[in-house]
Image 1 (cartoon, rainbow, N blue to C red):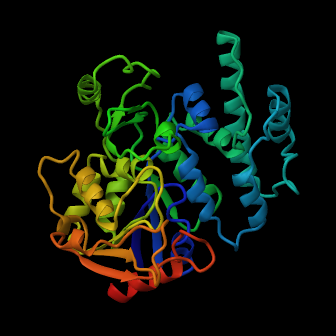
Image 2: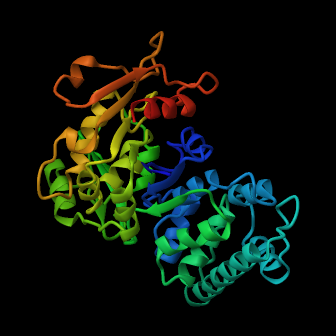
Image 3: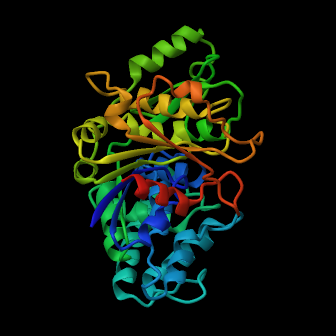
Length: 398
């Protein structure tokens, strides 16, 4: 059995993870951070004072095996969101039907597994208890618009597991007989913010993702508390940076994530959104050390195929340079490229198009890793990787 560990976000590895899971010689572990604070996930975080479960949920949904009973119904459960306009009372009513009768009004059929129903019912019962208590004290009701039912289940399970998101991920894996493991990088509730090169402050993970700009992000930070919007709008650019530097926080990697990296035969740094999904994981104390200490593992870095608003004007070499910067963020020494990477997989299209990341050979001259360049773009989905070809390339060099 070959132990594969992939460091990824919620969707960036969606092409390669199924390919790995379909191969019986691999045991897959995904390491994901949980700083997402956009939309309904942000509301869950604010209500429950917890990390965001959405990226964990998205990767675990990829790991639902086709062999389990009602696998499509389970996928529908993972993907269901209350529609816009759903009232508080209607959402509560549908959840109470699950708790009291195991009736899922939003699925094509009810779930037959006793173990799954028991987990869901106990989690949602705790979720409802908390909402009702919150309402009685603060007179505030939860907004269910576009809210994932699984986020509600994760929130209740979080309360049932001593507020430990790592234990929740393990419980979901066991309950749904997932074909791989998802491990959160850390369990501390921290908040991600960013600073652009022009001094613009990005006050949340959601702003890093959603606020579009041609100006590059200079640095990201983890803070102990949410940053109040416009707090730094009237201070100088230098003092904005000074404030973030003085208030930045560090987090410790979970024991399970460190153990997985130490045992890995292959470590893959997935493509994806860099500042909101991947760099925060690299910043986690214990992650870089575990990677460098595992000298027997082969380590593969996958650059993005298409441009996005987090990485404007990036060339292929900028991705691995950024990764090294943040992998050194929490360490006491400055590691080199070869400490973290053996190979870098770069898309080399037959014909360059404007939306594609440029393969800049000059940028790699001082980067001591082996380059595996090929046309890795999917034939069917523009700007996305062909997961099968990525895995074949990795195995041919392993």
